[in-house]
Each structure stands twice: as structure tokens, then as C-alpha cells.
Figure 1 (tube, rainbow, N blue to C red):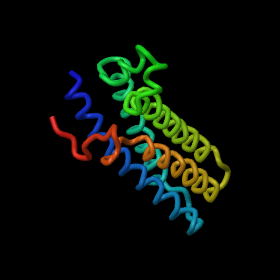
Figure 2 (cartoon, rainbow, N blue to C red):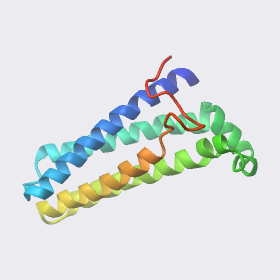
Figure 3 (tube, rainbow, N blue to C red):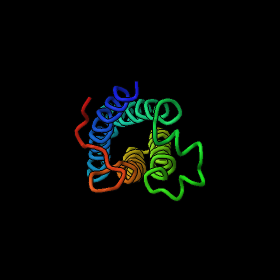
Figure 4 (cartoon, rainbow, N blue to C red):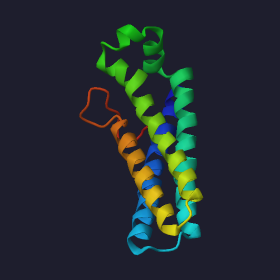
Length: 154
């Protein structure tokens, strides 16, 4: 169960990043041109949010259910804090991702409630961009001791 779930989680990562870039692009464009907040702008934010929530669900199953590193870290958090790999998987990765996804939720809610189209675009842009930075910081990039492959394999 661990390997297929990790494979799907790794694939969904790319969908999250692509949807983030698209939503941020739409928000930057809309703010720069003072354009109306169109249906596609709303859908871009919704897609980013939905994929983040799917990724969160998969991640929580890995973290609390079948994840090897997280389970080891949860058994001995004091010891995990001394090991960079266990600290990353047990604390840093999950914290960065939870904060990032929280910013996506807040940004989407605040952008929908804004009174002007310009404010909607600006709020979406700012929150989605901050979320993307946190998400990128929490990814196990190649070259790090906790690295994962950029292209998932079964």
C-alpha cells in the first residue's frame, strides 16, 4: 500500500504545482490589467485548492498510516529532531505543506469576499504566491539528504 500511495502522492505534486502556477498567473494578469474577476479566475483558484486538498488527504494517510519515516519520527520526536531525515519527514515537510494549504484556503476565501475585482486578484495573487513558496520549500528536492525522485516510479 505504501509504494502505490507514495506514487500517486508524487504524481499529484506536479498537478498541484501546475495549478498553482496557473492560478498565480491568472491573478497577476488580472491585477496588472485591472481585469474583471472572471469564471476562469475562480476556477483556477478552485482547482488549486481542490488539488491541494487531495494532496493533503494522501499525505495524511502516508503520515499517520503507512509512512515509514513519519511513523518512526512520531514514535520518538526528541530523537527525530536530531536526525535531519526524520526531522524533515516528521516535522518540516508536514508543517510547510499544512501552512501552504492553509494559505490557499485563506486566499481563496478572502479573494471571493473582496468587494472589487482588483482586490480579488491581488488577494489571490498574494496568498497563492506565499502558499507556493511554502509548498516549494517543503518538497524533498534532489540534492538534499531526504530527496525523492522528481519522476515517481512504482
